[in-house]
Image (cartoon, rainbow, N blue to C red; front, side):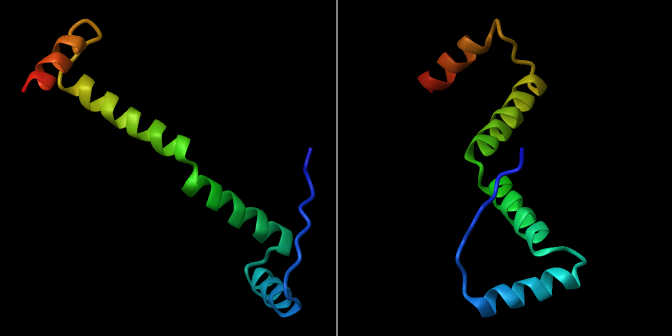
Length: 80
């Protein structure tokens, strides 16, 4: 279920924001939802970490490391 978010902003800012949203063919609420979704997407640290682990995993697989030999590889790197 959708939730309401009530905020207080300057009247001129609200009016200007509404005009700009309408120029894009969106309601003020549509534009606020879009901006909030973009902000969360760009700043969600868990997604950044997940992406990093995915890229690391791909590189490990590409280099031929397996679950069986990864511990040996880690030990070798730490010893160097």
